[in-house]
Amino acid sequence: MFLESLFVPTGIVALAEIGDKTQLLALLLACRFRRPWPIIWGIVVATLANHAAAGAVGNWVASFFSPTTLRWILAASFAAVALWTLVPDKLDDDEESKLQKYGPFLTTLVAFFLAEMGDKTQIATIMLAAQYPDFLLVVAGTTLGMLIANVPVVLAGNFAADRLPLTLIRRLAALAFAALAIYAACQALGIGTPL
Image (cartoon, rainbow, N blue to C red):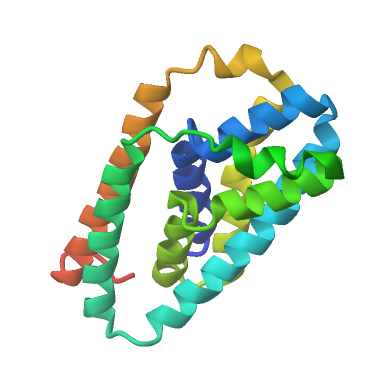
């Protein structure tokens, strides 16, 4: 369970982030600023802040429900995110264009933090923190997943983004969320090992 708290969130968020609006934002920032390291550090700080808050909410929510009720809520939530993952994101240029005058780090920090609010990876972080007991590993895993998906885009720019099979990757991410939904439902039914 210890390593699952790190590796499952890493894999889920890395897959879910492919083609997401924050990945498109990373590409846009990389093309506009052409300074990858301040952008990458902005992503790290924004993601840690956003996912730490989401993880805290997940841990807090988990304390209000019985384990069986929580498993049913998680199963339904993971199923909803699986469906949501199939819908392609579009970037809202207004968010980023107003911030561009502040430089690459601050622009990335604010734009990524705002873009993640209510995003599927933030919702996934809440659910994963409710499911897995180690809050710090979940936040580290979701942050690592965000970096796995976004750092190559920042470093490679248009070259990598134009060649990714986004539909296939979205389907794989949806499948991963669906598998988590089935796992949580099996747990709620008493099939398998407890969470």
